[in-house]
Amino acid sequence: TGIDNPWLLELVAGIIEPNEQPADVAVRESEEEAGCHIKQLKPMFSYWVSPGGSDEQFHLFCASVDSDIVASVAGLDDEHEDIKVHVVDIDTLFNWYEQGKLNNAMTLIAIQWLKLQWPNLF
Image 1: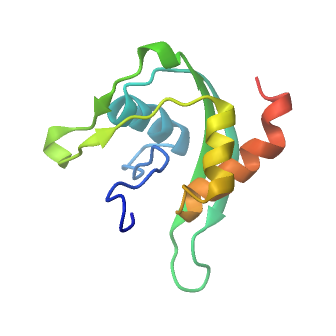
Image 2: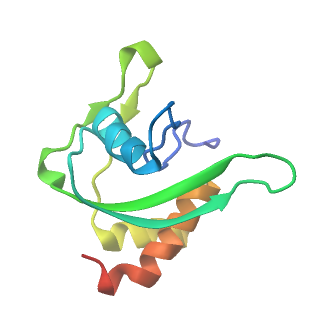
Image 3: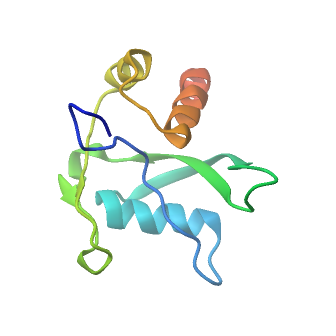
């Protein structure tokens, strides 16, 4: 968020429910928050958000999807979600990263990984 834009550009994310694995959350939340149906899911890595201060851990995944059939607006009404979905090409994404348009740690970490891995993915 910022002065010029109240929206935050971020990754699809969710909370692990009882009896759910991190990959299950990635699939579920991708459908709920972006209307994306994952074709292939690749684990990136997991990391502690603030070791010593929190026991919260993030599990990041990279997925291939058919971007021609994602939602333009998504989210669950009962979770009060109002999510504008952005489909951008890889060059635009990397430009946003370089220009500082992405400003939350999880997204920045994932884009850094993607920049390193992009030539060899899928």
